[in-house]
Image 1: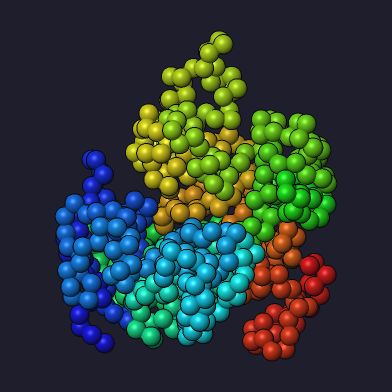
Image 2: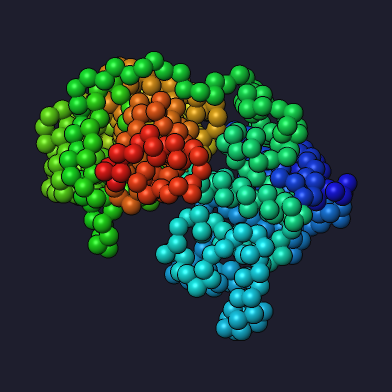
Length: 532
């Protein structure tokens, strides 16, 4: 292996107004390695990678690629320097084919057809060489997220990338798809490619990286060989204090059913059947976790229960039927029935980004008499309520007058959680509670959800993070293609079994050619196929 770094950053600094996003950062990434970068929200990881990929220009510092000082004023310069980036949210044209997406922006001439013809052979060669097999004529909208991610990697390789930056690459993948991605990364490494992996999942860092760098508050605090560290040490380096990496909770003491869902069906405006005959209960004093890859009906399920999606079937809250037709199907009526909702997308559904924190803390509850002063809103009271909630939920900075968009993603999430949890609901609907949230905030959010459960409240938790589901939930239901494929107790299942259910594979679908672990699971749960 060459001793010349594939990438060397020296003294990189970048400020946005008074905020110093990167402070004198230096890092060396060796060729043919997988180098992890971790840190809290706002630590400066994305800013640093955006400088390397040409989205931002550093205020100070130098970039060296294979020992040569390199100016990267834009992403085209980064591509020319052999750098490719796979974003967390894919940059694909949904109604184009795989081949068209790969070639788009890298055509040999002004004519697309000759470029496609020449690219087909090159794409086939790359797909075979790196285990990135995907149908070049498939339309992006018709393939799964795992395949779409392969297309993003193929795009970068087609453009000649020797250095790949992957930003939170497993956020939308099943465990099996994540494992396949890691095999692809190992194959790329064997071929001499250099990979930078940005992730908040410490287990992935430990499994797949050779070296890991830790960032905190805009500075690089440590770079260590992965084999010489452990998750607890990395978490402490990230946060600056010891962090509990597991959810501490006593066994649930479930009581009466708070919500009873029977034969729920949801069809979207395009006529697609999103939720199919779903039935379940959530009882007081328990957390029911809904596991599954995003896009399998979980979002629509939360929207129905939250009051902004129509459905057929039956839903009872505390024994009383709620309207699903849209006539009285709104968030205000749901809140009046004791339902609070932390939506999956905090920025689009949970907050108005150009409004102040104190205004956001009252949204949905502005009819509360405590917030009224005659016919007007009592803004002073709302500001004080917001201040109190921000301090209890450790929102940083605890300033009610800041706009929602001025907070980091983790602190935006805390504002939404503070608003909903503090209403003391009978049922808390919570979607992706820690998406994009740093490890310190994850610990706090989990504690708050468990605290509400222990007060005898019902929690319906939707998360694509299997370790979160396994740690928080008292029961787990798995959704695939709008159906509940099965229900498990965390103590009686494994991530492998849940991953198979997430992929639509029930016990009766498995063959004797699968691994011994899967065979044991099939034997143990042989009757579970009826749940599909």
